[in-house]
Length: 184
Image (cartoon, rainbow, N blue to C red; front, side, top):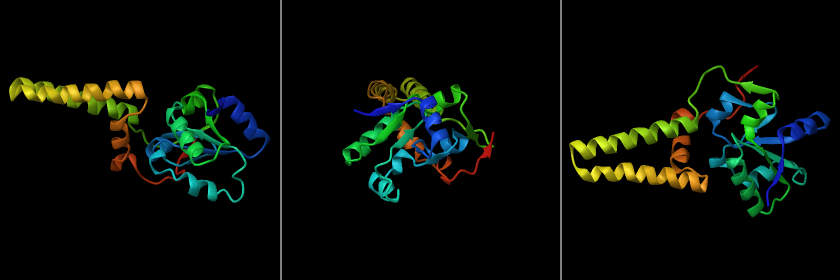
């Protein structure tokens, strides 16, 4: 079972001592906004053993994991647990909850389209394209709309989105993992 902590509890721990917080969202999402003190370690490139080895003997100290809303962080925590590291804690509600609690964030200078919004745009485009092609070219193109719709249904049930994972690998969603953000 994954341990959890609220944003306010983590912020209080951070005031009282040093906490290690990793953000498992895409580099682009991280550059757009992230909790102060978080370090970008995108889920799609997470190497739990290497990360824990790089902690310089602090692998017994808690590692806190945050994402947008908690789902990807939960998946990351599961990966740590499967590798034998149990002192890993999911930040409840993710960066959305962190911001809503009024806790300090770093914001990037440029506006970006969120990964969730990119998925909605791509899925909508593919569904409309399938419908138009089914009417104008061949009825079998309706299968494209059905396939994308089934993918969205599965994504909602499994809380894991294959299209989101593919879009996260696109060049506009990749980049430097460093801070590079202005502080607001």
